[in-house]
Structures are given as structure tokens and as C-alpha cells.
Image (cartoon, rainbow, N blue to C red; front, top):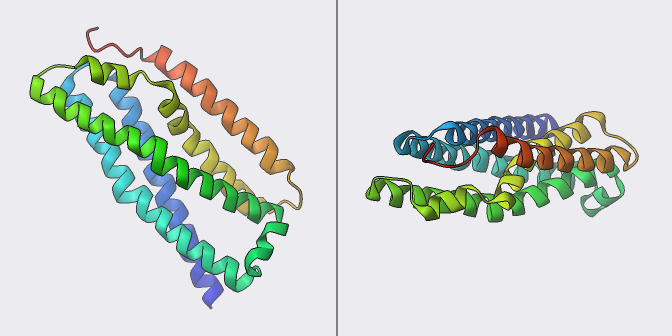
Length: 192
């Protein structure tokens, strides 16, 4: 019964993270489409709500249930010899660190700059400069493909590292393409 409950918790955590990241992604796209400061600020606020209210709780549930599953049913540190499980853990740790450093810090700064712009009553040069940054956009666009790869590894449970390697390269390629394509689709200049 313990395994089934932990598996259920793990699935719920994955659903929370997936739903939250989709909400963040859609809110980010909406912010890129908006040239009105108030609507832009609403989208940025929604990004924070999805991150703090859905993604972070999902990550905590995944961390606890995943660690418990590994310790109780996969031999603790022996998980390193299981390609699909080691790949999932590596990608989760990578995304956890990246999501709580580059992406989260960027969106917190964006929220602060948006609040400052609201006080001024117009988009500020600092906000426009921040919105055009490529590295935070890349890490943001990497979140969903990496989550899909983590889910793929857990569902297929491959015995080799091929799915991990090919999936990682595909996720990086997709994030790169989105980083290049989305800004062209919605060029960031507030005064259009």
C-alpha cells in the first residue's frame, strides 16, 4: 500500500508541476503579446501565482515522494545504476536548481521592474531591457520539454541512456528554437 500511495503522490506532484508550468508558459506568452502596462503586469503577476502556488508545491511533493520511493523501493543510492531513474533524478535536480535560480530570480526581477513601471505609468527602459534577455527566456522555454522528458523516462523506463541523451538534445533544440522564434513572433517593444 505504501508504494501505491507514494506513486499517487508522485503523479499528483507531476500534474501540479505540469499544470503550473503550462500556466507560466501561457502567461508569459500573453505578456509578450501585451503592449498595455496594466495587462502586462497582470500576466507577470499570473506567472508568479503559477510558480509559487502550483509549481513549487508540486516540486515539493515530487521531491518528498520521489526520495521516499528511491530509498524504500530502489535501493537508495543504487538508483544511479538504473538509467531511467538516474536520468529522472538528474533532470529533476537540474530543473530544480535552474528553476529556483535563473528562471525564478528573473521572474521576480521582472515583477519588481513591472511594479516600478506601474508607479511611473509607462514601460521603463530597465523593464524593456529585462524583457529582451535571452538566457532567462531559454531556461523558461526549457522547463516544459525537460518535464516531458522526465515523464517519458518514468513511463517508458528504458534500460539504456539513449532516450535520456536524445530527449535532452531534443529539449535543448526545442528551447533554442522557441527562444529564437517567440521573440520574433512577438517583438518586445512597448511602444508599438
